[in-house]
Each structure stands twice: as structure tokens, then as C-alpha cells.
Length: 274
Image (tube, rainbow, N blue to C red):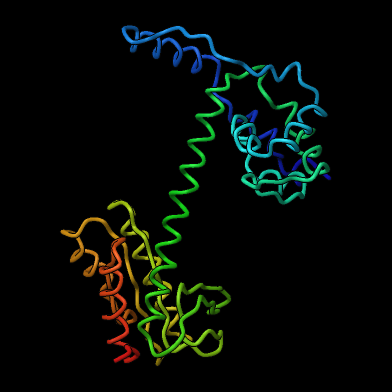
């Protein structure tokens, strides 16, 4: 394979992305100077990765799978990098791992590990990534709750679905019926967390609605939006004012808000239970 055809692996990408020694030194000096009045020197336990063989690391992963995520995080390795470079699919939060997978991962990351790292630093990395995972999961659960409320209030059953238009594949978060060839109601569910994202997300919704109507001109296209700036909801409605969008509804995390949004939507679609 020629150099122009070759793709970099994670180790090479990590080396290219590492902060410079100047930045590390400047950061250390800044931390020590800025917080000089509240710095305390403590004795903490360090893991000396330099003294650990790949086999010993593999045994640690096999016997204590809970530590895999934090060790991988300290060198910016995630499951996607492992899947790409090793063709190995793993759940970094799983309670079990096979000896073969543990050995493969250990051999892969051992050359990238720092010489040493403090246990509190690894624990903080684990806390950060666990919290990030749960934040994203909670947002996904919000979407699932909307679909549950849709189905509990509807005369028909909504499911995720896909449709194709002009050689592109589009996903609907909820649709009836669940068929690529015939969709009577398509719903796009969007969380928009920041005002700076509204134009991009609005363009995405309008584009999807346009492609939906090309394929299903007699179908309904609705959107349910989480946008935590109620005073700006009218601006969003104006931004999404388009003949291909049949209804725009807002919902927050509360069950009452979700219930109200889905009932308004289903009423407009003629599918609300009496």
C-alpha cells in the first residue's frame, strides 16, 4: 500500500495530537502560580506502568474490568479506536472481558501508556467519562419517553423508521407505519441545547421534511423540539415556518410537557385516542 493510500492508526493520531512540551510547562506554571495560596502537597499512590508487562496489564483487565475505561481514557483511546485498529468490538463498561480480548487490548495500548499516573487522576478521568456517558444516555431516554407517550396516546403504533430520497437515507425518530414505502406520519425529535445551534438544526429539519414530502406528498411531517429558552420559541417557529412542516411542538423533561406536546401532535394528525 502506498503512503497516499494509507490511513493512520490511533497511536499515530495520538502522537500528532499531543500537547507540546511548552504548553504542558506553561499550564503547570499557570496552575501553580494562579492557585499558589490554596495548593497542598499530598502523598498519593501512583501506578508505575513502566514496570508493568503487557501480560500483567492483560491480567488486570481480565480480573478487574471496571478499570479498563479509566486506563484507556488516560491515553484517549475509546472503543471506536479499538474497533478500527484491532477489528475488536468491546464495551468499555462491561463487567466481563475474555482473556483473549484483554490480552489484545493490553498489547495494543502498552506502548502508549505514560510511565506513571496517580490513582486519583485515573479516578477523576473515570468520573468524567462516566458522567458524560450518562448525560448522553439521559438525552436518549428523553426521546424514548416521547415515543412511549406517543404510543400510549395514539390510535396507531409509532416506531423508528428510515426512508430514502434522491439517493440519501433519512431516519425518522417516530413514524407510522414503519415502512420505507409508505409513511403517513413522520416525526423528527430534536434536542437543541444552545442558541448557536438553532440555524443548523433548523436547516436539518427543513431538509428532512422536504425530502419526506418528495416521497410521501400526502403524509404529515412533524417535529418535537427540546429548546430550553422558552422566550425564543417563537423565533424557532418562525425559523421553521415551511410548507413541508405540518406542526412544531416543544417539550421539556417533565411528563406533563411531553404529554401535552404529543397530544397536540396526535390531534392534528387525527390519531389521538378519545
